[in-house]
Image 1 (cartoon, rainbow, N blue to C red):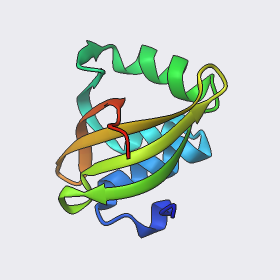
Image 2: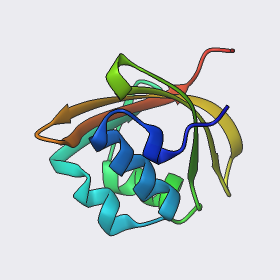
Image 3: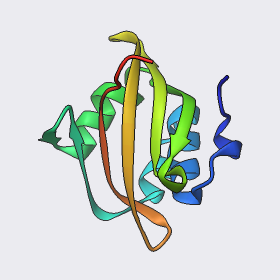
Length: 110
């Protein structure tokens, strides 16, 4: 079963996923705190460079399989035009109603 963005418990994560799936850069960056950070497979990345390459120019999409930790941890079937589809885990740090950090990487097998 896939959860729609509207079904996600954490409003900040809901805004993040909605923006990714709409390919809406303005809404995406509005969902983040100033100075937000991220990592991919445990390595810190430049957030703007990474999101441009992996999300916006590659038509990234998040199909959420499950959420835990009050909606701040997701397992997602992530797809983009570069890599195809892959099962990924996402963890979010939320401050003041917006995402201040997200971490993504391969999810364990189901």
